[in-house]
Each structure stands twice: as C-alpha cells, then as structure tokens.
Amino acid sequence: MFLIDSHCHLDYAPMDSDIKGTLKRAQDKGIDLFLTICTDVQKIPVVTSLAESDERIFASVGVHPHEAEKVDKNLDLYKLLMETAGHPRVVGFGETGLDYYYAHSPKDEQKKAFEAHIMAALAADLPLIVHTREAEEDTIELLKTVGQGRVRGLIHCFTGSERLRDQALDLGFYISISGIITFQKAASLRDVVKDIPLNRLLVETDAPFLAPEPYRGKPNEPAYVVETAKKLAELKTVGFNQLCEQTSQNFLTLFSKVKLSCA
Image (spheres, rainbow, N blue to C red):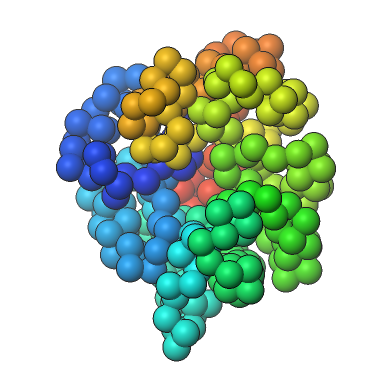
C-alpha cells in the first residue's frame, strides 16, 4: 500500500512539537509522502525548512484567503511566489482561493491574492491548491479567465456543489477529499463525490483540522488519512489498495515535481 496525505499543516500545533512522532505514526499506517501547506508569507521559511528536514515531506507556498488582508501592500506577491518556485522541495502554490463564508479578508483582497497565485502557477507550471467556500462562481471565473483554462491544480477539502465539481473537472482539476466525507451528516457531500472519476481524486487530512471518524473531535494528523481513504474506497466501490494506488498516482501526476524528486 502506498498512500499520500496531499494536504496537511505540519507547522501547526500539536504536530509541530512532535514531527518525528507524527511521521512515524503515519508511516506505520502506510502513508509515505506528505505535502505540508503554507497559509501565510511569514510561514514560507517554516514550511520549506520542514520539507528540507525529511525526504518524505514536500511543501507548497502561498497565502490562505483568510490571510490575504495581511499581505504587505508593498509586497509583490507574484514575484515572491516566483522566487520560491525554484526551491527543490516547493511543488505547488497555495493554499489560495476565496472564502466568503468567514470573510476574514475583504473580497477584493482575496481576489487580488488569488490572481497572483494563478499567474505564478501558469508562469512556473506548478499546480494550485485551491480553497473555496461560498465563493464557487468567482472561483470558477478566475480560474477560467486569469488561469486561461490552462492552470493546473486541485480543489482542496472539497465540500462543494455538483456545479463546482463539474466545472473543476472540465478545467482539468483534481478534487481532494478530506475526513468530512466520513461525517454522519455528510450524506449530500458523499452523493456529489461518488461521481468524481477515480483518476481525478486525491485524499487529505487538512491536519490538524477535520479529523475523520472515529477520531472526530481530536486533533487530526496524517495517520488518519487512512480512514478517509477507506470511506472513499467504499463510496467508489473499489478495493482499498486500489484506491490508495490510484490516488497516489493522481497526486504524483499533478505534483510532477514530486515525482521527479522521487525518481
């Protein structure tokens, strides 16, 4: 079995104080690679250092929509992202996107940051890790216009509509599934997810958030991605090992820089 946690935040507590233990517990469950996700420009040195510390860890760099307003107005975010693109352990841009549910940052600031990520992804040929909540139409529009229908990426922690699913797939995007799919009240989400082609699915924890059943209510960690994979295999009516193999291959296809590094 070969399984990848395609989205975790290893720099967040409590994992940041027990990286070796976190990785060991995950490896014992068959998880072999980890993509640790950046949410703030101040965290870029932290996530890249984590990726440099262990050959199983890779990193993204970017600004979460919640943090968009905090970006220095004098900072050229596009330029900063492009400067990080050459780092051998940086394999994608994000977590970026739009979140109108919490609206921790004004919409215009979120859009400005998202556009910078999209343009950098096109220029550097690296995939986007997209967060979207209550902002599906604007997310799709920017991916189509600024992204010119050519930008690569995934919708992370998918909880969206059939329309978002279909539009993302039409754009060539992958869709990443989190532990939410195991929640008792997530039947409607499962109905949307079951029709996503197997060759376009990834699995993630979003650790330390959104721990799947039976760990719900506890801090999430990469080892728990197994529970999400089990539920997804059940939903797709395929064997667990097949699900692990396919989602891992999907990850390596999208994040091709990882594949090159592992070759």
